[in-house]
Amino acid sequence: MKIRLGSTALEVVQGDITQQDTDAIVNAANSQLAGGAGVDGAIHRAGGPSIMQETSERYPEGCPPGEAVVTAAGQLAAKWVIHTVGPIWQDGRQGEPALLAKACRSCLFHALDLGCESLAFPAISAGAYGYPLDLAANNLLKTAMDFVRWHRGPKLVRFVVFDDPAKEEFERALREVVPK
Ligand code: AR6
Image (cartoon, rainbow, N blue to C red):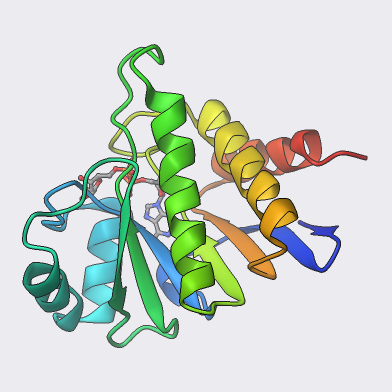
């Protein structure tokens, strides 16, 4: 499902983030940039060891929640991996929504700085970090919509969701956040 906003577009597709041919893909990393399961594991497996080598060399301090760092994408089709760290869900009153939106914006700013026309996001924080799927979908889509309308780019922002429930929530959120 794809919605146009002027010269930009927001899209929800079901699939594997590692298979995207967008200029950049986003990794749902941890603050040590230590690798892990889920999206993080899949990206390091498919991209090869050069990605971890680069994060260790360039970002030995890791990356705080809400921020993002960039590496090349090794063997992936994308040119760049933008590693961000979402919040760990507690009860929703510990700043999680602001941090998730900040993580999303940090990735979008990096994408513009890198000259990317297209960027693919996973459902940051909605797996191991426990962020409720519906709330993550609303937050990420609204943040991305506000960003692309204001900055008029990147041209394509794609949300890649793994399973049917995530697809339903992201498509619902896309219909709800975009003004008619
Ligand atoms: N492509 C697209 N989506 C995926 C893929 C994939 N290959 N694999 C999983 N998902 P998660 P988080 C979905 O746990 O919640 C790691 O260990 C998954 O179904 O990857 O931010 C890191 O090292 C879920 O909807 O990210 C951190 O320690 C969503 O992607 C921690 O997990 C995000 O799930 C980060 O947890």
